[in-house]
Length: 412
Image (cartoon, rainbow, N blue to C red; front, side, top):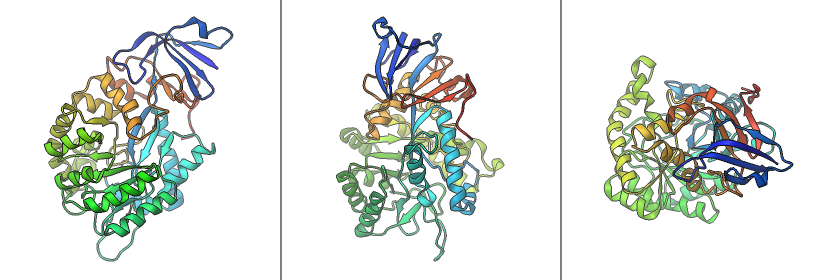
């Protein structure tokens, strides 16, 4: 057991910080988190935080470990061998961890490398964040993730399934591999040929996957750009809507009523910032620029309507590098209109709830001890969470896994 005292405590659920905070940790759990209480301190190692911020580990609900953030990363990912892809995936996961993201959810991986990396982390073979794996996403013939023309096959981020029976079987294959999430492609996408707004998997197909997932206690997510695909996914009962670019007011209202979560992936719009000079393919750039205005407006409408918005970055897409995940919190403030505290709560307890991870996401008695020590106040400047030097320590399950004070870092 150990205690951190003299903390500026952000617990992930409360609207205000505690300035004289204390956190008591026993093994892998939080024993106490709140105002200083001397009764816990007798005969126990006590570490004075000197007023540094202590807050829950951050959660990114949408990453791709098989993608590296290159301007045209489709080419790189195709050329990477399976073995290299696993090694690179480990390094990318460790970068996320060192940036303060103690939990990540993968949303479609080449070779289903996320499952193997997750297993290696869980078995203690490597240091890494908690990984919620999806394996391959499920798409239609020619859909988002089925990238090449003709009869050319490709080990990419999705498996093709057409019709209810095929989708059901594809979902069962994911369940057989003990995934934590089933990813569905409801529409086209920016990195795929053709219009990204077109609906792909239909409502009945997605419902078949949702039924299989729910009876096995597994979450579902859907890639949703176009209006029809967004509506199909919500009606089918998908738990988290990824992107939600062309959400209409009716679908927003249904999401609020049903408790469907939105992961708005604002970090993926870095593509616009770098543009053709950065090597982004022209068709991809034009799509993303077209999406941006509607995406931002509809996000604000969703927040105003009471839709629960979590933190997902689409990390690995162009210029959206692993380790830069906290940029999403800045976007939730600057674009979504959240306060810094609301953005932190979105990236901790709200996302934990969305992913059905009740043991993480907040500093409360009984929760798993995933937390950060930050040199500075993210409520005054949310961008401080993007400064790796400010993330002094990262604890995962009560263990110190990143310590910039001593120089201990995961091997990357």
